[in-house]
Image: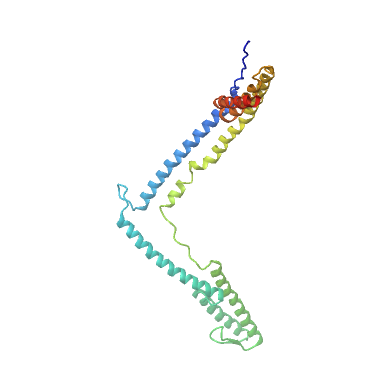
Length: 276
């Protein structure tokens, strides 16, 4: 009796397009690795700048404990003053909200001067306004009373606007900003890490672009396996070929050529058992 051989078609090689795309993807991954390394070097450089500007480190880079203690003392003193200022400003703000905040000395002096001018102008017209201050003054005629009333309404609005200005400012002062350390914020405006999302997306895109070529190869390979199965229909090992072909295709999809060989062996065994 003659023996017949059953040949399993080898998995098809990657196309030139797939190889090119995978090469580009590898290049992007190398770029990402370079960016991470550059970012790490930049972080070390910025740490060195912080140390130098802080003035807390000796020439050999060791933290000077005495300088650190002095800084803490100054910080605590500043914080105490800041708390006191904040308390005073908050109290002033509350008085402004309640309408109890005294107006500025400049406004009071201007009010007193304008009142004297009003009295003199009204007297020349025969409208006498009695009193040394607008709060207790009164007009001896209806015209004088009207002029005094308009004067009081005007300055009431001026004083109210001054208090509202205090409310609008929030009644709180801004804390002093850092000096030399602001340089580092500008230096760190650029970071290689900011480029990572773009390169990562590009690398993933190359991987996705290879999928159509992979699918096309697999369809062709499946057709070859089916043809080989048809050619060996009268072969007692037809079931073996079918199982090996399916296992090879599955193995190649998962693990490439090596996976195809392993899958073919597993599939052949399953086909043999199923054909018995």
